[in-house]
Length: 328
Image 1 (cartoon, rainbow, N blue to C red):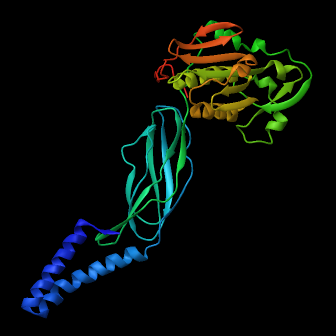
Image 2 (cartoon, helix red, strand yellow):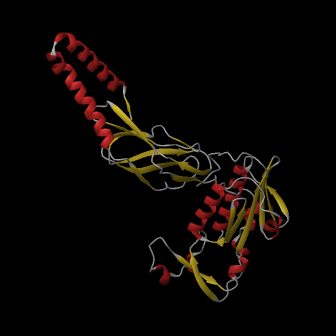
C-alpha cells in the first residue's frame, strides 16, 4: 500500500496544520489537522481491511486474423479499483483498463492480428479508498487463452488440387453402415432425418455406407523450416478445409501433434486450433510416408505434394493475411 499524490498532499496539509497549531493554538488543529488525519486513517484502514480481489474468467471465442473478439472476466471484491488486463502480442486493443466498484464484470474488445494461442492476463487490480488517498496493487493469478486461427485461403483456382477433392473420389455407395456428423458438401439425400430430429435443429447427421469410410480418409502432414510456421499453418489449414468441404475425413500431423481423421465443424475447429498452436519443424519421414498429402513451407515457397506431384500454393512465405484470399 502506498499514498497517492492526493494522499501526500493531505498529509502535507495536516503536517502544516499541526505546525501551525503548535504556535496558534488548538483551534487550528481542530479545524484543519484533525479532519485530514481522520481522512488518512480512514483511507488506510479501508484498504487494509479490504478483501483481496479474486478473478474468474473463461477463454474468449477463437477467431481468424482481422476479426474482433470480446474478453470478459469477473472481479470479486468490496472497494473501488482500476483494472488493467494483460494484453498479449497477437492482439490489439484501444482500451483494456477500467475504473469500477467491486464486484464488477469487465469486458473489452480486441482485434485479432496474429496466429497463435495467446495468454490474456493476468490483470493488475489497483485498489483505492473512496477519497483516493491510498492505493494497493495486486495481481490475481487468472489468465485465459485466446486462440487465433491461421488464415484459410480458397484453393479453387488450382485445378489439380480441386480435382483431388472431387466427391467422385469417395468410394461408391454400398450397404448402410452407420451415421456421422453432417459436413459441408454432403447431399441432403444422405441426411438421416430420424436421428437428426432428436438433435438440435442445426445439428444434422448423415448416413455412412460400407466401403465409404476407408477411401474417404485423408491424412495431411505439415512441416516448416525455421521461421516459416505461419505459412505452413495457413497452407495446411487451407488444404484441410478444402478436404473437409469435400466430405472427406481429415487427419493431420504437424510439429505440434497429431489428430485422427474425422469430419464435421467441431473437428474443423480442432484442426485449426492445432495449427494455431504449432511452431516450425518436421514430424518425420514416417508421418510423411503414410500421408495422402504433405505441405511444406520454407525459403523457396510453400508447396503441397499430392500423389507424388508437387504444387506451389498461393500462400505468402510469411503466412501474412491478404484480405481477398482469406476466409474464416
